[in-house]
Amino acid sequence: MTALAIDTSGLRKTYRGHGGRRVGVEGLDLKVPAGGVHGFLGPNGSGKTTTIRMLLGLIRADAGTMRIFDHEVPRQLPEVIGRVGAIVESPKFFPTFTGRKNLSLLAEAIGAPRSSVPEVLEATGLTARAGDRYKGYSLGMKQRLAIAATLLKSPDLLIFDEPTNGLDPAGIREIRDTMRRLGDEGRTVLVSSHILAEVEQVADTVSIIGRGRLLASGPVAEVIGERGITAVRVGVADPQAATEVLTAAGLRVRADGPILRVRGTDDPARITYLLAQRELYVHELAPVRADLESVFLDLTSGEGLGEASAPRNGRHADGAGAGGADARAAAPDVHAGGTAGSGTAGAGAAAVGVAAPPQDPPGTPWGTGDAPDGGAVR
Ligand SMILES: Nc1ncnc2c1ncn2[C@@H]1O[C@H](COP(=O)(O)OP(=O)(O)O)[C@@H](O)[C@H]1O
Ligand SMILES: [Mg+2]
Image (cartoon, rainbow, N blue to C red):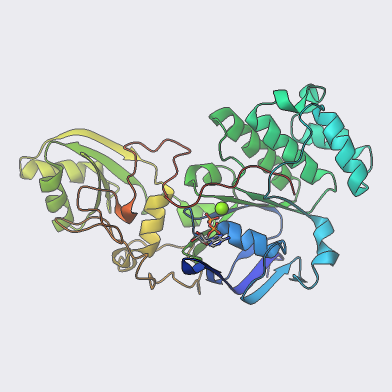
């Protein structure tokens, strides 16, 4: 058995507030192997931040067990927290001080050696800009400085909650490279995100959660690899009729306005053939990378589970909810004349009650949940 950096079992958290009870995490079993980058994926509101906060002892769990490097958390947190760096809260940097000065102050505060400052600046690619004031930094640089701060104590485990939120593509790449480097150094990086593409490019292993439950876990290639989850974008004059034809042929169809997203075949020619037989002519046909929404639907759709021809290797053997048991989450693709899963959306709208964009630009949130946590430091 591989050593685990993080190991939770039956983790549960329910928030009680004015609006009544709200499930944050519902029996989550999260296993993060030691060493490498682990993507913690789930739509907004699925429980990522709640899980991270419990792990760090910032909020209490209602039930379940948590271990970090084999230390029971929160009971033994004091013994292990020195090995953990996390970015979940707002950064507390002095705007008029340089990046280097901010880090020096922090290093002094936590008793880290002076030599650690140039090291962490180098590790986050900030050396050349270390003498510039914090307030002049780009968002990506600010976020990298936050990462640099967590590295001061040379942690074995880094926990980043949606670290690329609000960053432009260049900033996202910078953070990704930094995380990759940390993983390659043998550290464990747990990075949460609601954007599949961002995590897929950097993670070695991944866990996907939905509504506080684990849906799948394993090596990235197995969980979100090409197989069974690529889709084909189909543009056709009468999407309604095309949906009926394709659905009848056993394909899974989701409508994004006039564009259909079709899964269930790796052969676009089959789609054109089926449609042309009914005199429905395709004006656009393009294979597209699966987005998290597609993967999520795939994992939660009862229909997908019945497909013996497309096993999903990476599914965690005993992952709660992997059986699509959560009825609310069991949102199959739009079927002819049907409604879209849990939402009020009709056949013309995207499933999960969320309007998906026609393309899959990286960085497109697909949930309507909470606002992202803003950047920051420990
Ligand atoms: N402080 C809170 N009070 C009440 N409900 C909360 C609180 N924090 C989170 N929640 C709810 O718990 C669920 C999980 O939220 P969260 O852990 O923030 O998800 P994620 O980080 O995956 O977006 C959501 O339904 C959210 O609205
Ligand atoms: Mg969150």
